[in-house]
Length: 165
Image (cartoon, rainbow, N blue to C red; front, side, top):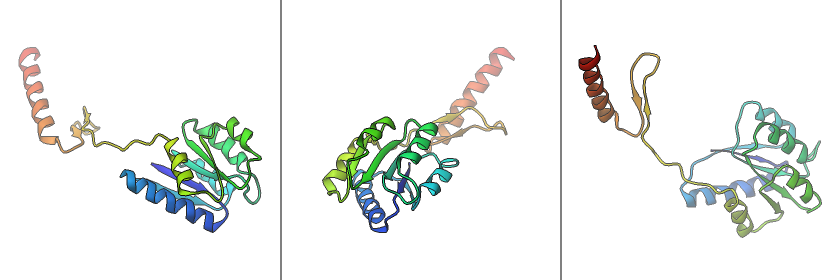
């Protein structure tokens, strides 16, 4: 899971990062955190990085957080967007870009947890999967079941060859 914090103030970035780390650790979820000091840096990163959650400050130097939020929505409708701000002035605009929460700074741990609850995060489960064949004709699987899959494919291939070839 890729998470971005777009915040020009160091202490606010560190506060969000600390709360996020504690929250994700408590749930046993892994994530990759990317921090951006400016809206321009974030918009540039959008070209190559899909984000699942973005914490966006409203009052950034150079432009408001609404402009990069619009860019985010053009590329990714499913990303959970949480605005960080000292004012409720842009709440209505937040609805226009489908923000899932609006954190007023300084925020309490409880407020942060409420914002994260609205993201509806689920742990990733290690589910065995089967790839019917790669470019080299070999089968691949996940979850440590290689021996069983190879055995099943071997029997299927043998039965098919006996009946139809």
